[in-house]
Length: 637
Image 1: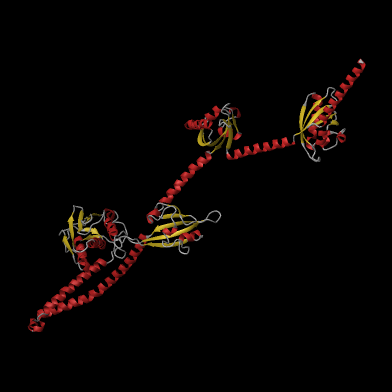
Image 2 (image 1 turned 180 degrees about the horizontal axis):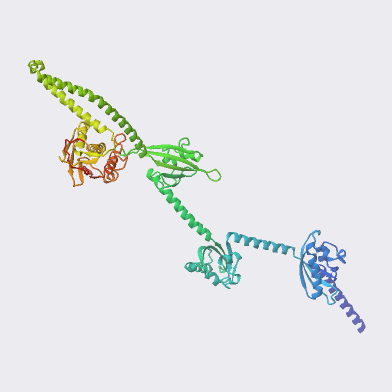
């Protein structure tokens, strides 16, 4: 009975042992990794099902074959060395290999191997790491590309754990901060922040840790050698469901060069704006919609209340129409055409003259040849146009003057004959008194005296006119100032428009002579007296006086009771072509020429005037060095 029980127990133990062996055999064969045994030559002694599947062969086809035949060519030498190392070292070794490309599914595998106790066989585990290797490769490439991108854009990344105070930083950030990997600490980061920006940076960081709000900041870095950098940092917090900040992630960009460029750009922009605004012409830039984009300081002065950013082109060029592509210089320029034209602005204020504006419109093409803008130059040429009209009038007056001189010469000869005949007839009456007994001839001597007197009067006027119109020879001589003044006054008193003006003189009888050009000085007196006459509207008085100012100068004063002048006119009275008269009634050259002649004679001229009080011109001319014979009013030169 006992023997029977013993046999049953042994059978049960054997059955359990076989069952356990079968379970382990199943697990071994169908484990998720491949199991191999290799001999010293690298031949396969045993392989499980998973291992056979990794090599894409049946198990019986693999036994006895060298494992290196299933390895990629580049890794075969590595495997051979690996096998030798495992047998020699008697310890577990690991190796990564790529399987041969001829397999249906080439894989990357990791082999972990250990020799048995007798060192005649090794047991190896083959693990498929293809996906892991691909992920590692992708991660490596991503990290490499990130590092390259950070280096190219000068952007470094970092993270900060507010609990452990651990800081992690990318290589580019370390380059920006000029730190080594072992210096990546919170304290070292704070140490390179510029002292003037330190409190602001730390406050923003603590505020984010406390409230979990992202922020952006620009600040400076200061290094021990004095170098400064500007950085731009973006900080994003990572928070849990309770709103507690777990970590801070930041990106920091080196913007030093950008800051320098911004400063240079601002300086260049300010320089260009200064040049833009200093140009004396109006300049306007219109956008592709024909609206003002930019303008300088002169443009609003030319067109008040019409030039401002966004104003359309019809504010200036075609007031009655919104668009005028055929006539508007701006719209033509936007179409790629250069335009040169002129504008005449008739002002509503009748006291102001019309203004003439030269316009040049040029297209500004963009890089694509589309969306053109227009650059418009506006030049006020009103003064130039008036000067041109004045010069035309001057040419006409010059022609009239030449004609008058010729006519005066022609009239002078007949007048001489008339005067000679009248004198002969008077002499006949004096020699034959009996002729007066005839009643018909009684009044003839009186008539002849009138003819003779008026003939000589006309002849005197013509002589004065010829003397005034004679061309100067440029030579200096002793000039009788009193006589020159009387000649000019004599010419002007016959002008009809001056008949209501009384001219009074107070000329020093024995006035010293002046060294000068007689024609030029007569021109000075004519200009001043004409100016005095024209300043009087209606009736008025002009006073002319001469004095010996001192031992060196003669003084000539011409005073009128005209309208006088404002200070802004007095400031410009000596400027060429400056005149308050309408075109054709004044050239604006008389007083400028007078000033130059007086200065050329080493003299001085001044003016005193105020509105409603008339004007006083005072001349000082140097007395001739040789002044032994003072002149009288009848002296000749």
